[in-house]
Length: 218
Image 1: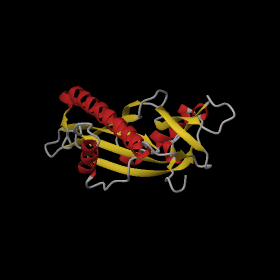
Image 2 (image 1 turned 30 degrees about the horizontal axis):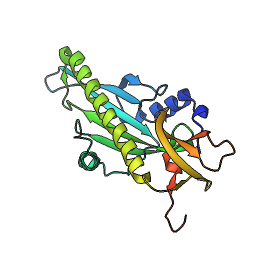
Image 3 (image 1 turned 90 degrees about the horizontal axis):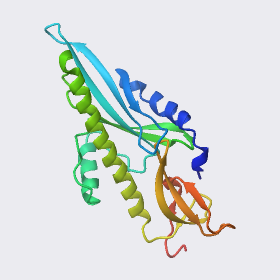
């Protein structure tokens, strides 16, 4: 169980972005973990082509700590995401996903025990240096749209999985899910505590700690 007030955005920030070192390139911009949005980062790469001219390209990454989406096949991630978006009636995938990886993390209140990284690259062959500014803007815009789509998808999948069924937390206590929020990028859920001494109090928990209880078990 995770109290939202105990999550340190700075600690989540360090854990999230340090986990992206394997991607190479230079970080040139990121949206951090201090607000209710999913963390994202843009990385700049540069190389010299066969003619001796430098070309630059940007890759963007959406980082979802404690992601509640199923683990995917990196070779089929765009198709799998498109299928889930269609199933939830959330429209189309805004751009192809060129990179996907689930990273194991030390289990913490601001990250969960893993993080899913979704990457895009609009110009894998690079662009001339004179077009760098426009290419970066295009990447940031596409990254923002992908982040919004993944945010909606995770929330819808969680609610559909819990809809109409009793749920319990990791201690076996009955909970009534009320609303979702993000703390440090991690999806949390405000729940009404049925067995609480203060019946109108709320507890913020991570969706991964909620389990649907069958009618037989209830």
